[in-house]
Amino acid sequence: MPGKRSNLSRKVRLEDIAARCGVSVSTASRALAGEKGVRPEIRARITAMAKALNYAVPYAIAGKKIVLAASSVAMIDYVRNQFTAQVLEGLHQRAETLGVQIVTQPMSSGTHDIGVLQEALHDDDVAGFLFLTLDDEDVLALTRDFGKPVVLVNGDDPLMRLSSVTPCNRSAARMATEYLQGLGHERILFLMRRGRRTIERRFEGWRDAMPDRNAAEIDPLVVEVGDWLPELAAEALDRRIAERGLDFTAVLAAGESLAAGAMLGLQNAGYRVPRDVSVMGMDDLPQAAFYNPPLTSIHIPMRDIGATAVDLLLDSVDSLAAGRARRIELACHIVERQSTAIARPDDAREA
Figure 1: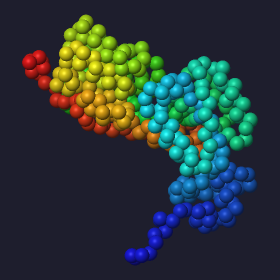
Figure 2: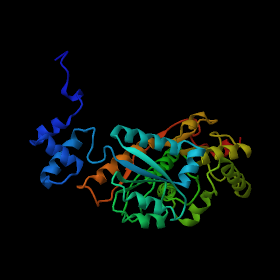
Figure 3: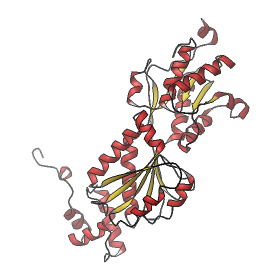
């Protein structure tokens, strides 16, 4: 009825969960805090009800600390562009909502920083660890038996012994390739920097969509650079065109900075984007809309990656979910701008 306040708009309280489960408020509180003295079946019922009602103070994590181990790769990316910055923004916003403190610990490559993390294992206030852009196999091997939850943020454990949150890198790259194919492009160059598993997933997605997966046909269409700098991508495109001519009509870059470099390299070589060559990126950083021309890109839900990682860690703290590693991949979508167009015949491109 008009003027009547909906119960759905009211913030869910602990009393609501207790009433729906037929238990006392103190029992509901102990169950959600992970304390002893609550039968497993009752704890399971209370936990499920809290999740179903989006209860705002979840389980044992409220008031706790999460150690965020950030790799040197993540820190470099943080300085260069906004991908890591947006992941961190989502992460910190979610932590603040849940009443959790984030303690950042920089990590260099290798294992000598693990000792600092191991000290946190003895801190009862530390609920668990988030590893940001960190997939060094030696480091992962040392943390699999930490005894406290570890969630990889924008990384994955190939053996599925650690939980992780990433975008759907493989299917996203396939989606991008098929989008370009829908515009009539058959020879699609893939521009990448090797090294991280997340980028290898993007390479795999491009390869999945290519009609001829014979290595002899695929390999010449892969251009690698040594770093994520636009100028290196531009130089790589200049060299390839000088050596092989313009034997492609589109470029899919594994990262936005490489896409910007690809457009620069093509323009330096006298070609127009998208009239002669279409260029597409992956990430959809805010600056993508301000390139010349504005860049068509795969939108990566960067803030959601950070927020979801906190939620996944929270579920891992819950004793009912402990020990079950999960890999969460977030859906991505295409943002169309002016850097892509319908492929034209060779004679039209040369006119």
